[in-house]
Length: 136
Image (cartoon, rainbow, N blue to C red):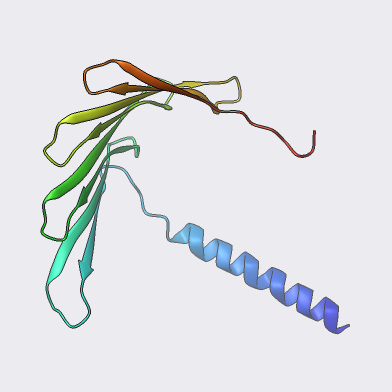
């Protein structure tokens, strides 16, 4: 009997936690999220990360900053008409294009291939994704 009560309580708690989490998901359309850090013992907050979403709610840019507020890196996302990420553009702290990642997807909309180019457009490497189900 105690087992049944414990299991029931655990299930109710999990269901409550899940509903609370879904209620806290922000509307990401045209949203900019700024992350600030404050050192212990200080009142000065330092911007360390910014994420920007477009009118469709898709992430279009991330910027990471050093503690002195200089840009560490920037990443832009481009989307295909079907809504999947088609390219990622990675920039260094001086806003120079370093890497371009281009993606292809399989029939299940999972990433199939990632092509990695340098900032000048030269193919540097190819990553292939393999999905293996343990149920197979």
